[in-house]
Image (tube, rainbow, N blue to C red; front, side, top):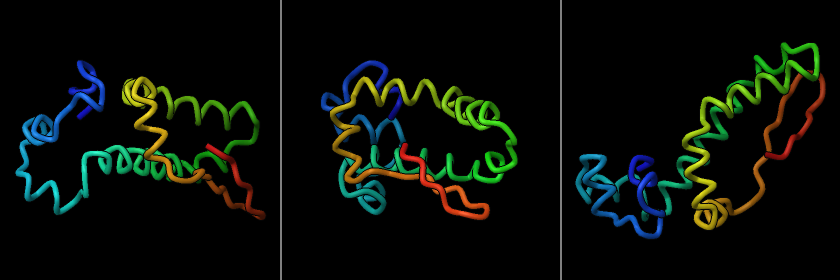
Length: 114
């Protein structure tokens, strides 16, 4: 889908184009997603979940700079996809139904909005 977003906005991309790009049938698509908007939701949740998997690495950081570096490296690795989502921010905004938080646990729970 991100290859398609490089040429067209999310609104301009048809479900048929997504199906062709992914080489899946309509039936298979609907087994996993309700609509094309659900693809964006899936990516956002995957992005957040992958960031949460950095929990152990982040907790090992002894400085604020270390924490920032781990976080920025993650965002840098995802930069091209995030850029496309930001360009299509109306769709991204509607995909996020509620604020997302990353909780890092050590001795206490700290919540960082993302």
